[in-house]
Image 1 (cartoon, rainbow, N blue to C red):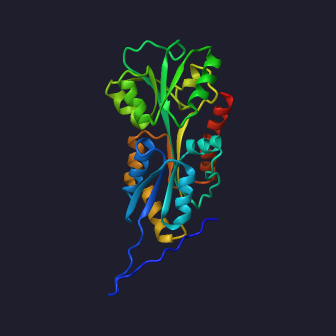
Image 2: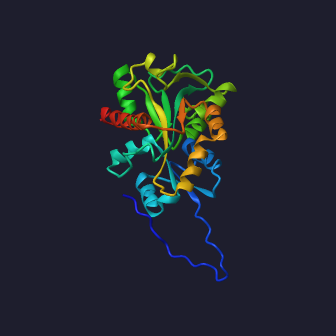
Image 3: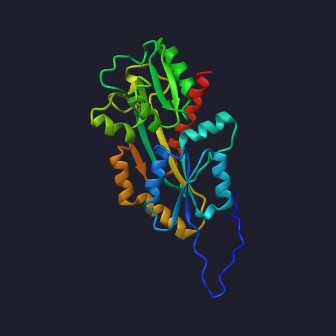
Length: 281
């Protein structure tokens, strides 16, 4: 149970009113990267005053929400749940549809520079990917399944992975679609494989993989009991501008009316990462 912490305040003598607190959009992810960009895109559609608050882990976010639940909305990517579980830390694992403001899934593309001839199974091939993934565990499992000698290199986010690929520091990069599609369409990179199991270019159709589907799942939720604040959070998630953000970013799925099925999708994605971690041990 989250309790609101009531803080003392000092009003001006001449009858001034106390301003409503900002809505904190708490992003549990690096301050720069696709999740942070998602949080900021959502924030722009709030009508009330709001601020972007990036935090590094679930426990920090949970303490912030406990201090001020009514003015907090959390953007939680699924990989932070699996990271917390692997590290023995605390994170949210139960949600109700009433708490969920929005849910979205994007997928990744496996990309390389034009002219690259190194296959993912070749000795010495380097694949970059976000460090929040089970990087080495996935790599070990992939090598065992495909008799490969792939080396995986962790980067802070997909944005850094793309920079590393363009600089030639790695041979391949696993890069989320909103970041990989623009340079792909400009001819700067080539992306033969997708992490979306429904795509005809899905990686699992060419290589043996532990899971056929590998999304980036984002859950927006709140513990607020303030109906006006919640209404603003919900209208922002359903706004035309935020829908356009999803469309331009080639998100695979999104909804501002999430139900139990969406919550289950989110948690399944999180625990798929736990399975990948365990398989590589």
